[in-house]
Image (cartoon, rainbow, N blue to C red):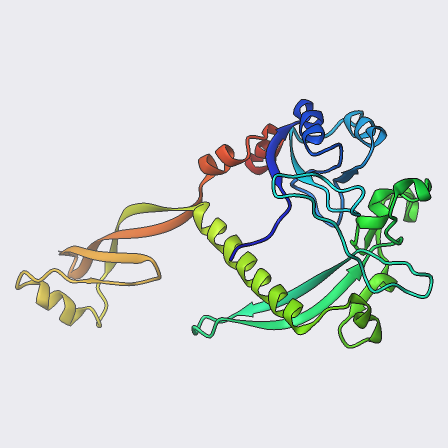
Length: 294
């Protein structure tokens, strides 16, 4: 059991990308790993696509290269073989579309596991072609990209804006959802993959956090509640207690000044901090690191 993903090469320099694309048979996906909503994703199916990508002046230095899952005749060749889209159930025009299924789950802190919350799907803008040459005006991204968010460069006041192509959204309670051709086994498989992914993300976040112990000294005036507490100290008993989460307060001694009693204490606090050194080792991208620092 594991998370199924395309063959993925991380932290690839720009000048190394053509070599990786060649090893995948000339078909690949190049991603800027710090963007979303379909931005920064380049599907490479021909030399022209690669040349156009290489001509762009990119902000980041490192990229992700993945095997392309397209049609059977234009997908990447990987160590595990060639994967391709089956597509939706053919429509009246005998067209099939690439689609993805999204399942949302909620985790319980009571040990009840994960519960499915919502299921929906999205389909690509144009039908999946057997051969790309059948429609030169149809790009590979239009056949493979399922993102509903679309960036309009010339929006209001000439500024880029975002819009949504909701007509490509397939809701589970609509008849269009049946076009996906999914059965109960597929939904169970989607649930397992989603839960494994959520757990993996949580473990990665835990790995990127380190515990830092901070020790400080404090002095406070003794309250009435602390009277019996200081009385026990006179007999040599050292008492520790939690004042706040992840903190331990250790009473050192009780001193008296101007007729008032003060408690001198040492506070040991455990703080969780982002492990910048580990993140830098995993993501050696100068542009990204400068964004995090500033």
